Amino acid sequence: MAIEPFIVGNPVLVVVDIQNGDPPSSDGGQTIPHMENDGSWVTKAAGLVAKCREVKVPIVFIQEAHRRDLVDFGRELDGQEDVHLLEGDFGTEIRSEIGMKEDDYFIRKRRYSCFFGTDFEILMKGLKAQTLILVGGLTDVCVHYSFVDGHQHDYFCRVVEDCVIGSSLEAHEASLKAMEYLQTGARCSSVKVVKELDALVGKSSLASL
Image (tube, rainbow, N blue to C red; front, side, top):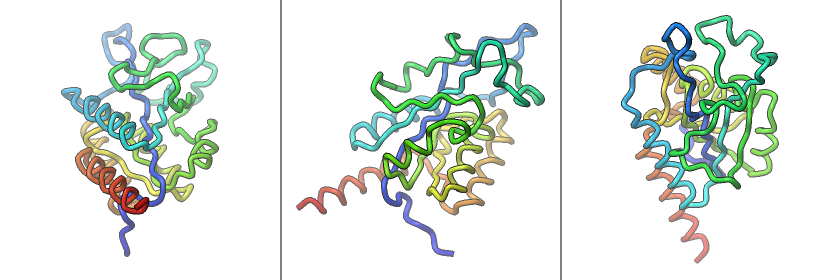
């Protein structure tokens, strides 16, 4: 099977749910489980945001937010997750260190996939996007589900494995493998993305001569 170039056509950086996060629940546990980490994934994701600004690649920030009366949770609370990310709460806001600006593209979603019940697809068509580069969390939930929907809508999808975090290390690794199964070459590092973006700019410069 032929492997496509890393970036096909117009790329877009999709920043999935990098939010402040909820405080511990009443029993001291997490409202949403997260694997142990040193926080470097956020720093690296912020670096990619800055790089995309530099090379003029569109960035779309995704925010999961639920109505305070819980009406839009649906089956989301049937598993391990407790009530989380309610509208108006500090934890629901996009983390300041990720570098979002007031005039950035912003999509609010009620469910896991950034495609589901939002205007994300309309925005992608307007941007003439072909390659989606995903960072954020959770690897095994919102990133994975968004990747799958992107795949089924015929986008070339890339997941930056040092810029995502899972609910557990096991789930994180399993989802990365599952995404690579769908699109060979989907898994990548932030260093790889920066290199490919620089190469893309170089080609554009040569084409303009």
